[in-house]
Length: 213
Image 1 (cartoon, one colour):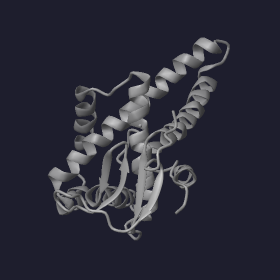
Image 2 (tube, rainbow, N blue to C red):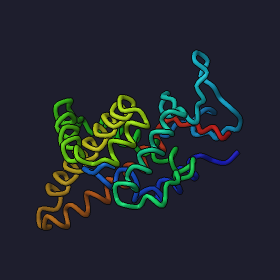
Image 3 (cartoon, rainbow, N blue to C red):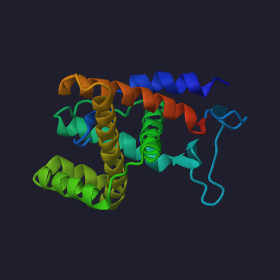
Image 4 (cartoon, rainbow, N blue to C red):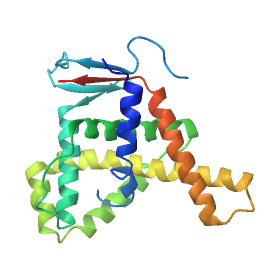
């Protein structure tokens, strides 16, 4: 048994150049109960459909299907960047850490009173599809993964990406009110630093259990 708080913080910092740092591209009271921020060993299945579960974040389960999507997304990014020689998945713990970070961003967006809209997400999705319409690699890989499944996950990803952008915009506005003498670059830097700190705090607030298999 290892304290999840420290495991997640380490993995979170290691993942900073991962999913959310690539915004706009293909690629948001500490609990004290025994079930909170735990690390457990052994296989855990969903009682109703026997899907293998890797973690529980704020009551929402992280399943094998979600890990498969994160793995595929990483491979797709490498292929689109002409790095097809490296078709390996990130380590399982890194994938879980990235998923927890994404859920922490959505949690923080709710706290800050901001939210991506269906229209905003659809516009991003349409632009993405247009940009990649002529990409044979994209079409072949997405088809092999499952087009409907891919776009369902990708839609949720863009909700989170836009949530992250809106949080940063709100933080920049707050910084401008406090430090009106700073230029835009400094305000954005302060907002980004505040954003990173708040995400780490949010990870600590969400009731999370990781199951190692």
